[in-house]
Image (cartoon, rainbow, N blue to C red; front, side, top):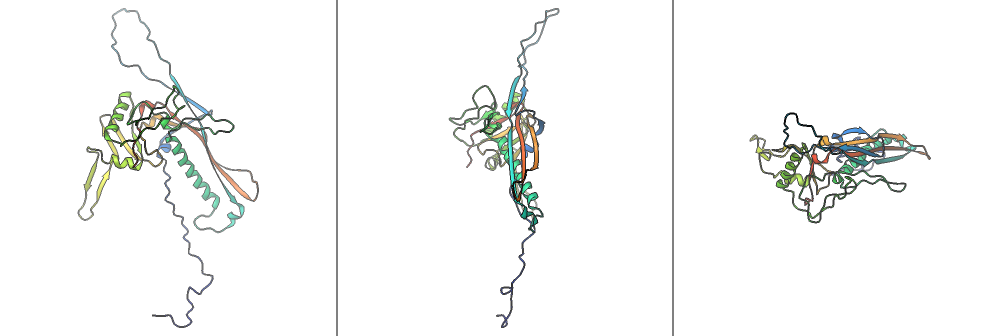
Length: 318
């Protein structure tokens, strides 16, 4: 078939309006399960401190009538600390931009500020999981908080050859040394769960990346469920949401920001975020024909007692 002679079609026409959807599609991950789950407390200094303590081991305790009382030797609390880290992002928009008719958002500044606020939360989540010692900072060096890798040291398994727990007597001051990587196993996981229980901890959440999660799906036991349901709607269910052991019950939380080589088994109640400056969206002074807005948060990680948690370290990631 062919067009009639002199047909004026859409290829010849001028001034046709573009067809641009008024929706912006963004699938970027924005979940921050660890940061969002932690209790927020107040910091009043850039070096935030707290104390930990423990009971002595149980002992025989029987005395004769009328016996003179002798006081037991007591051990002082342990004083710990972490430095606050400043998380800061900004966006600059020419003032002309606010007058433009744009698809997908009515105001460019509001849209961009929302984006950088989400991105900053991801930065915070990443810092909390980092194997990073704290940095006190100075006029030329930014302060940095110590992440989980510098605190979780008591209950660990699978530490590879050449690897080592943080050295020194001040938790948070040094990072863990990575070792040769080996495969994440159920035996290592159960070893850490038992060690946490012996120490008195009550682990509730396991944070691990997608590769380690796939290995965990292969753990033996009733927790590994595969079933086919309804003949007309064949479906295979393969999930591991809750893992029940004699040492406690934990929820598996696949996580994008934790280091792939580390599987953290945490008692979330034993961690907090101490906030020196809550997240604030501020318009900065004008320096020309533009508007600048800043999103800033200052906080640190509080490890109230790391012996309540554990780590399977140095796991292979492929």
